[in-house]
Length: 240
Image (tube, rainbow, N blue to C red; front, side):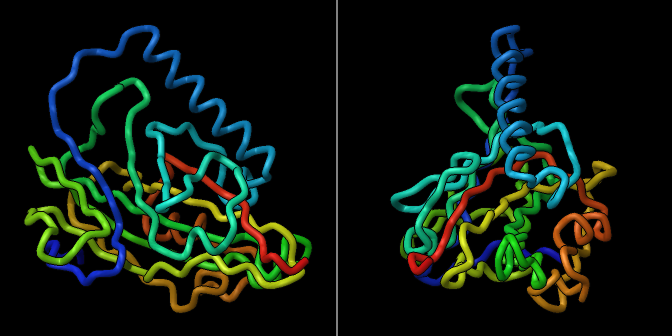
């Protein structure tokens, strides 16, 4: 069960920006921009074999921005492990809007991070590795930013946030080549705004399934979730 957001320690926490405001219907140009963005995601994810290895093909309805203090995920760019040790900032937004992020009030948005290349892409006997599961329920009529700032400065909100599985920074072993680290945003398949009873994997390896190459797709299915956004990076140990 998700709990109300409380004050947090000094370490980094998830950033999610919520904005509930009326908007006009998108223009043809805005719709085209969304289609192009979705196409780029699908093509790059397929080329990287994230589709269908990690997740089945899907039509993204939101764009997912993932960033760290000095780097940002860009659908398959390579980032050194030292730059991704802190929890990333996550923003979800509609490409048809240039100003705001639009959400369905009180629906649970689940952020996940998985590594399908453990210990290596050629030998994925540990895959997938669960690196992160976080769930957020935006409250109505609120705009909230939860940033890596001091405890006293964290805004007081009625949003709820829960880290189901604590963020484990990417740490590819030496001589295992590039690993794909895949971020997904999941929502309830039935569109419910009721609280979710999300399960916590019993182990990070195989997402607790005990079966090679099993991971986020099966966890999502078991929890009645479907993907609406994605992003990914490559990262590798400097010793190759």
